[in-house]
Length: 252
Length: 252
Image: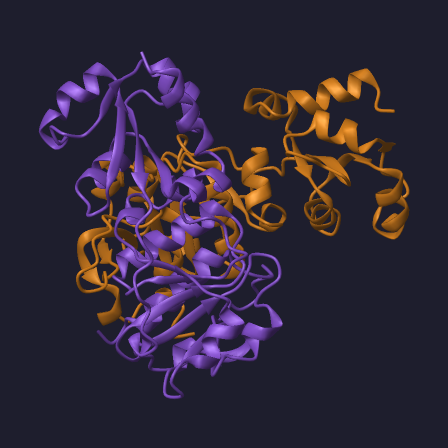
C-alpha cells in the first residue's frame, strides 16, 4: 500500500512546476530505475512490486526508502500506460559548472527550443552514445526531467550532464576559437568537410529551425545532403543531430 | 455536420482490421492532407472546417466528396489530440511489383519487426529524404497506414513505396550479387568502408534486433562507432538507419 501523501507527491511530479519546486523527478520502469540506482544520482524513494523488490534486492541499497506497491498502484501513480515493476523518485542533480573553454576540447550539443520531450530524450541518448561533455538547453526546450524525456533517453538521463542557458546570450561569450555549428539547408555539405568533435553543435526546433539570435551566432552552417530526387522537406531534429554527430566523429 | 455513417466509417479506420477491409486509411491535419492531395494517391473524402475548405479551395478537386465539420467533430473522429483543420480518407495504393533485381540499382530499406508506428513513420520520412526505391516491411511491423505512422512520416506516406514480405523467405531469393546489410555491434566500422547505395539495408526491432532467419541472410554486418567512453547500449532504430543511410550516400 502506498500512503496517500506519497501518492500525491509522486503525482505532483508529473508537472514541471512541482519537479522544479521539489528538485525531484520520476523514473519509471525496471530498466530506467536500475540505471538510476547504478548511477551517481541520488534516489529519494523507490516504489516497487514485491516481485521486483525481491528480484533486485541486491541493487536496492538497504537504507533507501522502499514502498511496496501493486501494479495497479504503479500504473495509477505514474505516466506509463502500464507499469508492472517499479518507479522511483530521484533528485535533480545540481547544475555543474559550464566552463566557457569546455567546447575547446569536446563537442557540446546545444538545443534551441526543442519542445518535444520524446525528441529531447532521444537527443540525450545520442549525447550518451557519443559521450559528449553535455547538452545545453534553451529555456524554451522540453524539461530534461519530464517523464517522457526520461523514458526516451533510455538511461541517458542518469549520465548526461545538462545545463540551461539563454543561447543567444551564452554563445557570443564563448572564446573566438570555438566553432559554433548549426544545420542549414544552405550550409556546407558535411560529406566534403573534415570535422573534429570540438565546439558547439546547435540544433533548432522541430518546426521553426534556429531562433534568429542563435542563427547569427553560428560560425559554420552544415548541410546534410539529400538523396537525388528526394522530396522530404526536412528531417526530424534527432535524426539530423545523429547524422551530424556521426560526421563529427568519423575521424576518431 | 458529419453524417453518422461517415463518422462511423472514419472511426473504424483507427483500426488496422478495418483499414485492411476497406483498403483505406486516415490522413489528419492540414499539412498531411495537402501532401495527400498533391500526391498520386486517391482521396475518397475530405472532412474540413469551413475555414480550411475556403483557404485551400484551389487544392480541393471539385469532384472530391467534401464534408464540412467543426473542430470538435474533427477532434472527436480522428486520433490527434486536437484537429482544427481537416482530415481525409485516402485509398491504400495497390502493391506495386517488387522486382528482385531492384536492389542491384538502388538501396531498399527492409524493416524486421519494427513495431512502433512513430519509428516506422520516421523511417518512411528518411526513405523519402534519400529517395529510396521503397521500404519492405516484415509482417510483424507496425502498419504503414496507421494514423501515427502517417503523422510521423510528415508527408512521406504519400510518396514512399511500401511492400510487405516475409524477410526470411524473401532475402534469400535475391540475386547473389545483391548486398544485404544490417547493423550489428560486431560488424565492420562504417567509417572505414566505402558503401554504395545499392542492395538492401535491414533494420531490426527496437528491442530485439534482427530475427534469426533474417540475421543469417546478411552478407555484411555494419557497426556504427560509439564515442570513446560512451555508455549508451544502443541507438533508436530510426537514428541508426539515418546514420547508416548517410554513410551509404556519402559518395554520391
